[in-house]
Structure formats: C-alpha cells, structure tokens
Length: 297
Ligand code: NAD
Image 1 (cartoon, rainbow, N blue to C red):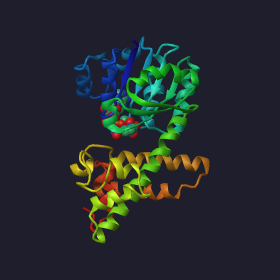
Image 2: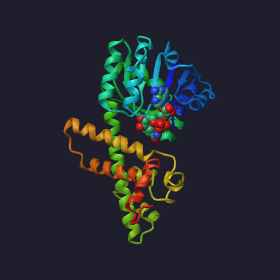
Image 3: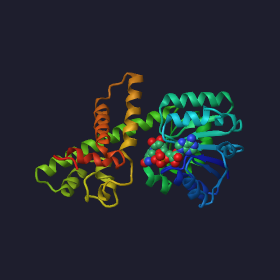
C-alpha cells in the first residue's frame, strides 16, 4: 500500500480520495475548505495543518483542482510544492487544464527530480463515487505503469494517450464531441416534440437507428424520458454548464495552437457560453435542451 497525498476534495476529488482510503492506502488529504477535508477524514484519511506537510514523504501526490492557474500556483508558486515533494515521487494531476500549463509544470518538476503525469478523467461525479472513471494519461511509459495500480483504485479504464499534455488533449477532444452530441440530440428531440412526437417514442426510434449516441442512451436531455438523470431532476447534479464551457474553451485554445478546423466545436462553445450567460452555469449541461425550446425555460 502506498503513501498518498490528495489535494482538492471537491465534487470529484472527495469521492476519489475516499476510494483510495477504501483500497487500504495511507491518504493525507488537503483542501482550502475545512468541511471538504473533514468529510474525507471521517472516511479514514488523515490531514495536516498545511499542504507542504501533507506531501512530505508521500510516494504519490494527486491533485484535482478547478483550472490551470490553481495547478501552476500549487506546484510552482510562492513556496510551491516543488520545494516539498520528495525526489522520485510521482505527481498525478487529474484536473482538466490546458496543455501548456501541464508541460510547464511537468518540466519544472522533472528538473527537480520529481515525476509527473497529467491524468484527467471522464465519468463525472457518479464515476468518481463508483470508482469507474476513465483516466487519460500523458507522460512516460514508466510513470504510467507506476501510476496504474493507484489509478485502478479510482477508475475502470486507464489509457496511456502519449507524452505530457496528451491526456488533456484526449480529454478536450472527448468533451468537445460530447457537447456537439448533446446539442444535436437536444435539437433533434425538440424538433420532434414541436411536430407532435412523444419524446420517449422518438428516443426509442433513434436508439434503434443511426442517430444512437451516448447522450440519447444514458443521459437523455428531455425531462422524464430516462430515470435518474439530471434532466429528470430539474437539471441538478451531474456536469455543470460552466465546466463544459471551460472545457470547450480549452478545446478551442488547442485548435488554435494546431491550426485545426473545429466548426462544430466552435458552435457548441458559443451555445454553451450563451446558455451559461443566461444564468444556467450551475445547471447540468443537458439543460442546453431548453435552449432549443421555442421559449427557453
Ligand atoms: P470542485 O470545484 O468541486 O472542487 C475543486 C476543489 O479544489 C475545491 O474543493 C477547492 O476548495 C479545491 N482547491 C482549489 N484550489 C486549491 C488549493 N490551492 N489547494 C487545495 N485545494 C484547492 O471541482 P470538481 O467538480 O471536483 O472538478 C475538479 C476538476 O475535475 C476540474 O478541473 C473539472 O473540470 C474536472 N472534472 C469535473 C467533472 C465533474 O463532473 N464535476 C468531471 C470530469 C472532470
């Protein structure tokens, strides 16, 4: 069993750290919000008064933070963790952030003798709780192999996408496609409803036809078509519009860097930005369905 420091115990990090405790690891947890720390300590984790003490002596340091600026400041900022992590330890950053920050943090840590992989996830809060996340890893083969037994305790599918930053590129490609599928599925369902179709019947037809996709099958955006999905719970829980808008911004930045054409992704980014700007940032991303209603709710 390993000595693990886990930093960032929000919607995703809290249950991920709990799964590591349940797997028998020694887990020292830290978050800026004391309540987030207390709830994981109640599951058997330990904590220290400051984050530097938490990472001292850890074999693995896992971070799950909102954005690139938080990750850069945690590791490379004033009195950053680069000064406190043991040489030879492995940093696993699972936050969804920009590739440039990954490469900057990875190369600074590598120079200091500390190993690093980017390992963003897919699967949402449900996957984090159930331990069934998909991890998309960027880094060396050796670091991937060292991290895999730990990642196996939090996820079901662990992929090695390539070198540093490749995990983040895979993540934004996936989420850009997800956003396009969610917007397209919403548009098709609303078109059927406007023309007198029952959305349950239309969903069944499309699920057996060539329009079948993940958003239709397991995350239907039309209320009361599927049970136990955010659309049937007033679009609460799940994956926030604000986070999808952030990921689409990262996808567009990535496209600009490589001079790629992403017209569907650009449209999806604008739709989700408009939807967030209309006061829906805290709702689940399937609430984009309402944008295609004749009167947005
Ligand atoms: P969250 O806002 O719920 O949690 C982030 C946590 O980080 C907070 O508890 C915050 O206090 C803590 N934090 C911030 N700066 C810190 C610091 N310097 N030191 C210690 N703690 C600090 O966010 P989340 O939903 O858990 O998402 C985390 C990351 O995972 C994001 O990058 C997000 O894009 C990604 N992600 C989220 C989902 C999802 O469904 N929520 C799915 C896949 C990926």
